[in-house]
Length: 516
Ligand code: HEM
Image (cartoon, rainbow, N blue to C red; front, top):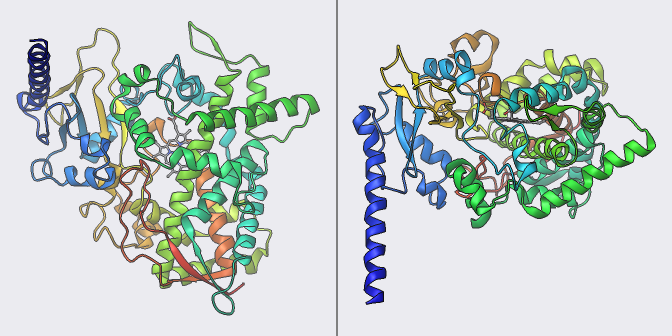
């Protein structure tokens, strides 16, 4: 009898869930908006959540779906919650730039009460705290600050080349390396040195703690993969499941490192003008967040800023750098032209290359990086949440459509698919830096190229990331010519369990000593 009751309740609950799921899916039907039909309850993204597809490939699939490809935007369901995917660049501009105030928050969110470090940081924080925090952190990445970091990045670049020099030779003056790991070690050493004043030694020491804990943030096993997916797809469950943005041991490591460095500088009075100094200044100036609440910027909230810069910095930059090296391996004519530009700069300045030469005098280097970031954007999509003032009934999409976006609806911008749409970038899978030549730039429509995001919530570290990539490419290519090895993959497939773009294949190449 008891068993029958359980079975009955189970069936009832399942039917109820399916009914609710069907109603949500029917939402788009009722609203007259093109949508991608999916399994009730699970919605459209279950396949990503369960790691059956790479989220990049899936986003591209729904973007080009027969039901949606002619529309300015379309509906999907994130589990049972309806969300909007924008296709039209003018519409993207309207929401993320013109009316940015209504779409400044992200949908993803950490747990405010159990995950201070995951919540009180620029990636996750919501208005009105976001604007204040962005204002407090922006001075850490001004061009004056980058100028001061340049020599530190160049030192890490020299360490990277030294680590290649130390590899065993396959033939005289020929070595082989794998770029993903090399670049991750480079960018981790850079962030540790420039922001925290710490020698992480990832390039010198295979067992470096910084690399070990950094890898844990982005190395997704099934549990970590689902945890990260939950921040995007099920933010309301995050507090109940007590999920944390950083793995616990990584958080403890970063907390210890950052607190020790702050304490050491406070004791010794040492000042390097870097990020840690800025954090100490915020604390000493009694900086606070919030209008009514006044949350002091100290303790874990300071650690949160440093930890997030670490997280947002190294994997993104290393991803673009390693794909650039991969494309240079496959496109010798592009590599030769780039090496020629570098040869001329070294001929002019020797090893003391001024900051301005990186920003103004190497146009082809910039074009190669821009094209890499188009073809291999770090994120599949960026997202916002519609956040309206109290009493507002919704956000009107006029003149595009008479649909009204309800408050709190997530809005997704599929940058990977837009970057590879032949309508905006003809022959999109071709690696062609000429697209970004000065004379071609006016052919790029606004809001079709968004590797660093778009609008006021765009990436805070774009110039810092780009400078690192420029220095790394210059250092490496001024010593080595790179070429295919027997292990260089011809075609890349993407990891299903990673949120940032990451290939299943190792990016191998042979390095030919050919110093300038
Ligand atoms: C090539 C390297 C990089 C790429 C491709 C990249 C890409 C992105 C993207 C796509 C976003 C989301 C923007 C949006 O939602 O509109 C973002 C946000 C962010 N990035 Fe980067 N990033 C890179 C390097 C860095 C570096 C080096 C740092 C730190 C120093 C950094 C710090 C941040 C922060 C703090 C945010 C959140 C900004 C906010 O919400 O106000 N990024 N990045």
